[in-house]
Amino acid sequence: MPKKQNKTAEAKVFLGRPGNNVTIGIVGLPNVGKSSLFNTLSDLQVPAENFPFCTIDPAVTRAIVPDARFDDLVASWQPRSVVPAVLTITDIAGLVRGAHEGKGLGNDFLSHIQAVDAIFHVCREFKDRHIEHVEGKVNPTRDLEIISEELVAKDLAAVTNRHVAVSKVVARGLDKIKAPRELATLNKAKDLLEEGKDIREGEWDHHDAALLNEMQLLTAKPVCYLVNVSEKNFKAGKSVWIKKIKTWCKKRSGNAPVIPFSAKFEAKLQEIGDDEEAKAKYLGESKSRSMIPKIITTGYHCLSLIHYFTCGEDEVRAWTVRAGRTAPEAAGVIHTDFENYFISAAQYTYDDWKENSRDVAAVRGAGKFNPTRGRTYIVQDGDILNFKHSAGSANKKRR
Image: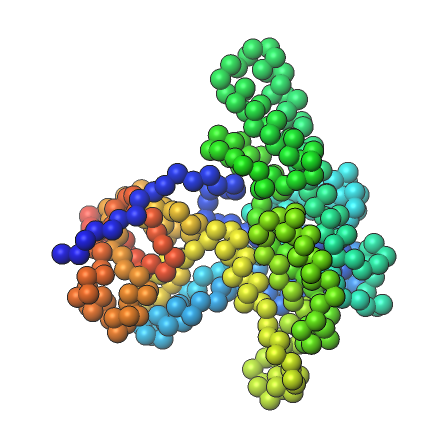
């Protein structure tokens, strides 16, 4: 019998909403290429005209997450239905300096940022005399600083208001347990924000995280920086600002990813489509390729998302869950009853399936098939699962 290697749940400090239905928002100043990027990421055609605030209501799309493992499973199973993993993306209209004070359409859009779980922060490196820059001159590090200062200012106002209210409770002795603990967290958060730093860069314990998650602070959200380069420079593999931008981002957000791309280049590739001859002519000697797959997968991982697979002749599907979720929680993504009436999960990995002739029987024979993963098992990226539960009728199964 194979030795059981059951991964068990570990306590983890996590900033953000606990659910699996999470979104990433595209943020930046007006006219930096946010909506053009969004148009490439989706079939929706949101406005991308050359004037500030053209995007009034946030548009939402679901972009397919590229995964060669999923493609391999589909090719092998040849199912009647195919459902890949997706990344939900929101296009948020441009912010301007002073947005936290209501300038531009700031307050509405800051609330839209509050509603997402991570941020694609787009800055503009390209120059184009036909596309107005809201600050008058292209300077991406300045633009990054403007947006970051606006988010910090909004969070500081929220934390300060809460701090005042909780301080009164503590001073009056109305709550001697919860309020003092909350005040300690607010003190830490307030100090950090007053230094101009983001909440996500602080060191927080589980008590801190519970309050911060409740407040849904803007600077607690993971961020990925996207640098919109001119079509010409992108094809040539050049970037005037990228070193300065990376230096700024490293100082500001540690290991946050920085991805150069060109909205015009991506739009042209999308227009060309599958015409390989036209694509070769357009690219010429350029070695540049679409950055959209990298942008999508990086955003996916910024949200701490992974996916597991369910496979069968009827359907091959990738189910999205947050990293660190238990087997019952992962089952709940399919249906809440599967979590509530969870019994066990049969589990093996894509890698083991591939290494054993893409055959489930061979996986069993190699001792890599785990028929009864329990409630404490932590689902891993690339798991193939079959849940057993008692919802509806005893021992009912769902592939």
